[in-house]
Length: 305
Image (cartoon, rainbow, N blue to C red; front, side, top):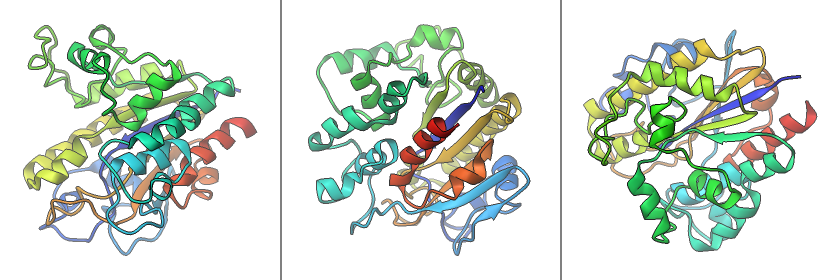
């Protein structure tokens, strides 16, 4: 039976306090996220939410390690099932340390799914200067990007973007002229959601990575944080409208807190949200407590079906 998973990874989003002064979730207009979360923005104290079409749980991102969670080790846990922070001895980021690269190469979710016979796709498109950066030998890459390179999954290019077969990291393609591609014109985040759905229907497992939320959190600028969140909500609306939720599970998850508390420039130790929409959402929600549970839960879902 046909089945798809679409994973929307949204960097640096935790569940914060109910505070309009510091938490942009209480300033932004987020009709889709608000509806999925039971009619109110997520906040602490948190109680799991179950609606007619969604399950929302809080996921532990501290990984049993002191200090502030970071992207390198947190994303390793998320995309491999291995507790990167414990293996390395501390939280580390923004990119994974060299000691974790063999773990990522061997155990990343793309490789494990491919071994199981599933088709996989990473939808983010990259400008030419990024490929030149990679060819220079740099390993300062996100875990998802590094996983693709280690697994032989081709990264999407400006040509893919032009053919609507790749998604810009900002959805709207705003930075591409500055990145050396003046031929690229802007689109709406809603239209980018249509493109994601068009790609996802051809693969068993499809990921998009949205890192602007983490950047906005570090900047501590409320207006920018609100705009970034509203753009994501517009994208999410389009995806939910476009995919067939009878045979698709959509998962929205983060790696650590940040944007939910603009009173600090740093990350937070808050739990991160996991929002599940569509097929098997209750089954998956019941098995995830920590970032390390996500990859095993999704692998089991594909194997069991």
